[in-house]
Amino acid sequence: MKKRLQTFLFWFILIQPFLDIYWLSRPPLLRFSIPTILRVLGVFIAIILFFSIKNNWQRFKKQWWIIAYIAILAIYSFCHLISVKNFIGVEPTGFHYSPIVEILYLVRACLPLTILYITSYSEFKPYYFFRVIQAISGLYSLTIVISNLLVFSLTSYHTSEAKRISANIFSWFDHTNYPFNALASKGIFFQANTLSAILFMIMPIMLYILYKEFNLLNIILVSAQALAMLMLGTKVGNFGLIISLVAFLIIFLLHSLILKNTKFSSKFLITMICILAASAAIFPYSPTLRRSSLESGVAQKRSNFGNKNKLDQELNTGLKRYQGQKQEEFLKDFIKKNYWVYSLKHDLVLDHYSYKNDPYFWLEVMRRPAKERLNYRHLERDILSRVMNNDKNKLNKLFGISFSRENNISPLERDFLAQYYSMGILGVLLLAVIYIIVLEYGIFYWLVNKKTRTFLNSSLLASGGFILFAAFYAGNVLEYLSATLVMAFILGFLLQNIRYSRSTKEIVRK
Image (cartoon, rainbow, N blue to C red; front, top):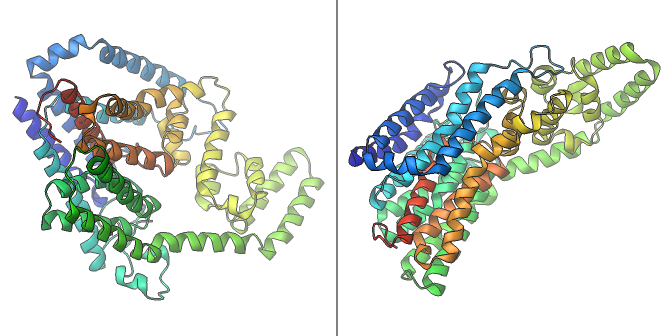
């Protein structure tokens, strides 16, 4: 039965790239995509296989801290559902809250935690772990690279429609007039930011595999992954590539020259330097820098918008002329006609957080400098903060305003903060911070236990640290099972390694 569990985990994690294909995510079933439903079934099967092993069940019954955590999580979930049900806000529909979606989200949030626990006790062999990571890297990276070269890749900056790129990577080096969002590629997958975080996460492990198994296949896989991260055209993909290469170079030198528990390899070092140099040479031409330059220029241009100055005078005159209800009606009419002049995102103003329900919030936004009005991530955070504060429920900070409301208002691209608004402080601690705790646990034993201080464990710690940094910095990680299930698998394997290192078993080698 243990072999069956390991085999199932192998294939379950390996198929994640296939479940991340764009067209499988649309249309959703019960607001959750078909891949999500398949993942729920997959984790359910893993649970059955895991507890079919007698030793696992006996161990679980003795782990009071795990049982206590599950009990606390169940109590939290019940209280969360009660709290968010009584939400009162300025939007008459309650921002389309759905108890079914909320329950399914709670179930979905527990799936990676379950995989983390199961993997940590699965005795998963390093050889098969490396094959899974190689497969994930190859499936994502080669798909992105080939689809970019043949110009049939989907663009990274569109998720609501399947829009293809206009030109391949060779056009980056010409003085092309194509906009940045017509050049950034995500292959045939759904979310570019999530994909960037996954590749950022597995790069240290791929480099470790290249060191351990230095051959043409792994050189091609690592090189393709580096190129794919540049093609994605996201900050996490581009900056993450440089960060991961430099960080791993330091880790390699630390273990080979200072800790001296890893053999120095000049051919590996030269290969790494070549990949880093090539990446650094291509980086200045990437769509990411084109986007940054464009946004800076737009902010500068719109800060001096002549038409806006006249409208500001009209707005101030109208606000002084009218009072009470008449002032509010004047303001609504003004926003409806002129929001675009103030560079306000139309779906936020007209739909997600309508000016009709809270015109004075949008008045405050319109008075901000152009650069702040164009910072939509900051604006989305302000909207969610406004919604939470408008409701008089004092428990919002503890239990959140619900995932379905947060997602309908403005899905915040900043993990941990997004979970705070949707699930509250308690939800963040129980469902998100636990990954940080696992990482800190690994770092602690790396520092205090010499046997744990291996090159592999350092690579796994870097991997976990990278994706949690990406979650905090750019978001679109903790809400997507394609990222969290792979992350849980890697962290679970890290916990297994630490356990065997502490118990001196020789299942995992340096």
